Image (cartoon, rainbow, N blue to C red; front, side):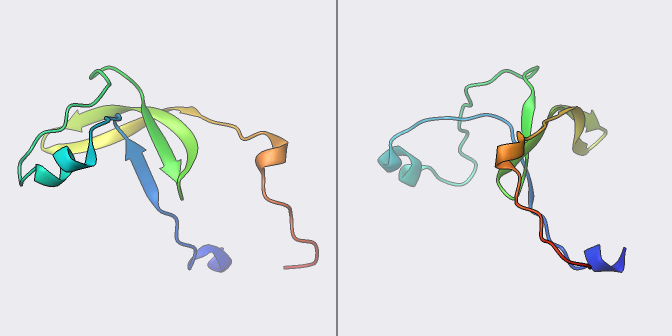
Length: 88
């Protein structure tokens, strides 16, 4: 397992999306609110290194916000990286 100690993975959660002109975005100040095209009960998308890997639901536990995984997405074989041959 020591081989995996130095692998970095960026995990992101997409709560929703919004479209707006860049000039409007640049005028927004601290504390501005951007309305998303999603509802509170909609699933969120979970990404690993910008690749969708799962879906989930937002969970509130006191002051903390988390994500509960509800579905793990399977990538088709053609989208998987090629295996390296040889011994590890």
